[in-house]
Length: 73
Image 1 (cartoon, rainbow, N blue to C red):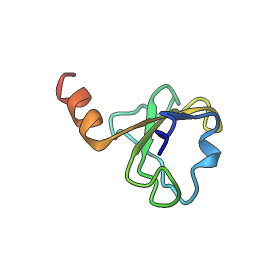
Image 2 (image 1 turned 45 degrees about the vertical axis):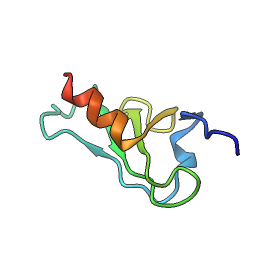
Image 3 (image 1 turned 45 degrees about the horizontal axis):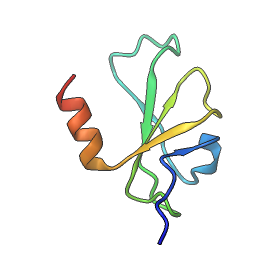
Image 4 (image 1 turned 180 degrees about the vertical axis):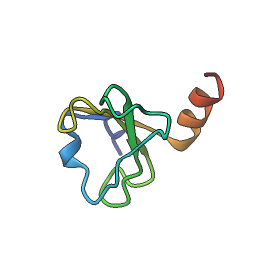
């Protein structure tokens, strides 16, 4: 079994996702958005993209990795 890539070249490849952004966002599209893909090979991972480029790449994290990252912020 090969490991899944940790990014996708276009976040539009992630189907049936609902992108969320922080309630602290100013609405100026200068933040990150997150989503949890429920379908396909990326189900269960956390996707992160730049709100200024919604069809651009998305990074993928395991829930544990994301929790560790945000705990250190």
